[in-house]
Amino acid sequence: MLMRIFTLIFSLSIIYGAALGKQDDPETRQANAKRATYAEVDRLNNIAANIFLQYPDSAHKVAGDALIMAEKLNYAFGKGRSCLNLGAIYWSQSYYPISLFYLRSALTYLPKNSPAFISDTYRALGRTYADLKNYDAAKANLDTALYFAGNDPGRQAEVYSERAYIDNFLGNYDKAIDEVNFSLKLNKIVKAEKHIAVLYGRLASIYIQKKKYKNALVFNGITYDKSLETHNRRLLAYTYLDYAVIYNGLGRFDDAVSFAKRSIALADSIGVMDAETKAYNALINTYELKHQYVKALAYQQRYNDVRDSLGNLARLKTIKLVQNYYDLNAKMNSVTIMQVNERLNKAKIRSQHVMIRALLVSLIVVMIILTATYYFYKQKKLLSSKLQEQHRALLDQKQLIEAQTANLQKVNDLKDKLFAVIGHDLRSPVANLSNIIEMFEDGYLTPDEVHDLMKTINPVVKGVQLTLSNLVEWAGSQIKGINVNSSNVDIFLLGVEMEQTFIPALQVKSLEFVNSAYPGRGAIADENHLKVILRNLISNAIKFTSNNGTITLGTMIENNELIISVQDSGKGMSEEEVQKLFFINTHFSHSGTSGEKGTGIGLLLCKELVELNGGRLRVKSKLGKGSTFYFNLPLVKAYA
Image (cartoon, rainbow, N blue to C red):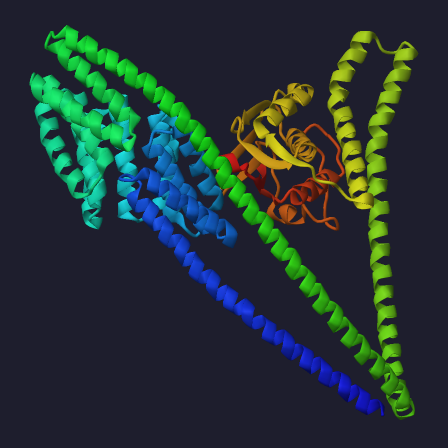
């Protein structure tokens, strides 16, 4: 009977598992559909990237739709590309702050395995900062873009093109020309006709700045032809503007007027306000050069009206852009809410499946127990064998516990030995102080003699203080552990603090303390731990360095880590001593060059604190040549 019930329950579990398997089919179909939708997001982003210079408003809608779709799918790469496209669109319409917002957002979404698009984003940031006249930020972002461009000649060419744009504004014309020519060479390799057109325009602009108008006219003619070939209406508007400036320089004022008016009309139709205002200025300049001041004044009035209307339009567009942002954000929030609800529903379904599985398992367990009871008399010998095996396992555990007890006893003996040594080393300085006080009270010592003795004994007292501090730190770490509170720590400032702390000890031996750490270069570590580490290392350096020696605190950057070193010109150690230095069973302590005492616990504490902060303490030493203790810590990301 029991076997029949067991068989029935087992059959039910198989049927339930098959039902769950069928439910997995829609999930597979959903995964396939998601992959197909990823491709649609990429397609929309490709369209937006290709049309934003000709039709920025249409490109904005396409990129926005791609962003919403990518948010629904939680498609990080799609969201990153959508933000990159939106940033480029707003840049093309001269809305630089909004462009910066979307470009920075793109960097938060783009995965690390897409360096090409990360390069595009940093390049766009560099150009936007250049248009905002923040050339330092522009150069920094372009350098980062070149790093991510790797061996891609097309993206390298775009970076050099933007560098030329900046150097032209800064007056570095020859350098700008070299950068444009190098960018042209790279773009011709990849046949990037759109970028080649922009580069010829860049050359025309540079020669305009150099007032070599005939050269500028040649390159502007090439730019005109290529802007028509590539359908780059924004570039064409600036080409008309450059014609107006060139013809003003050549004295061909009628031609200048004609091209300035063309630039105004085209820039107004595509919403490039910067080109439109510059074209009005060129037109006003033309009539002033022709001494037609009435027309110049008339166009000045038109310029003022256009500027005011552009200002009003800009405010209206800004309001619209803010509204578009909030609309887009609201859509993304609604998508997020839907995703949360979907996850909650799936979680409920999963919990129900878990409950059903648990019930089935419980029923099976009950049947197993009943079956085991039914067959108990047949399993008696087997259970006896198992009990014997358990008995042997208990014996093995007992032997293990005894071995652990022996090890604990050894550690306890080592602790007693350590405290005995520490007690001996602390007793002598305290006894010396007591004797000095008694002799002074009995009149055997004058105040001047006591003052001289205090100068001599001060380093010893400092050493005792450091020993007590190390003992407290070490004992605390052994009893209750050490908490690490990491922060950005400036090693140079800690070096200044250490120098002030050890001034008396340094003066006694006429030692020079050199703080060569990088100012402002921070490490991620617990500041209190670093103070304990540096106090011990510098104290040891003073202890083992003879008079007129040098102690150097230094830092260097290696593999995104900060290497911190304390170097002395003292008596050094042998290779055998170095091998024993950081182990609790073999550690040792020598007297200093002036008879200073120590326990060796300081270095063990330093090793433990360095490792707690993610580093490793090491030493380089040569007998008679001095020692260098150094350790690595994670570098603050801003300097990595």
